[in-house]
Image (tube, rainbow, N blue to C red; front, side, top):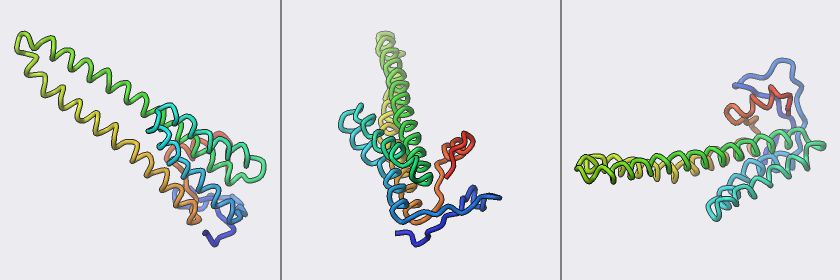
Length: 177
């Protein structure tokens, strides 16, 4: 449990000029870290049923709506987590679709050209593309999960965590801790 009751906004390792310290209760630290840790639920539901990942997005969304009037700190972290998880689900779906099209084209082309023996030379390429696609589609969710859990751990320990690009984008939109 973080001992600090006050967090100063830290951006790129420096204290932001002119920002006031934000008072945060231990319960808020816990809820903010749970918003980031909800990535586990999204991944489990995504693996279980694909579309189930969309149900997992309801957790950080509910946390955001539940805390946006009570705690800017929790609301900011819940919104960050929601956007991170939505982006992860969307990127994974697009990546899977693109790789499926590429693999289909590679195997179709090598199959059609197999009658003239040129396709036999293309089959190792199609096999390599298939193996790389499977490796990427299996490993990417675990990297995504790891970064989300790193965010949960960092917030729980009392750090000012920002997802790469997402935290800055939210601050530009006017959402602050």
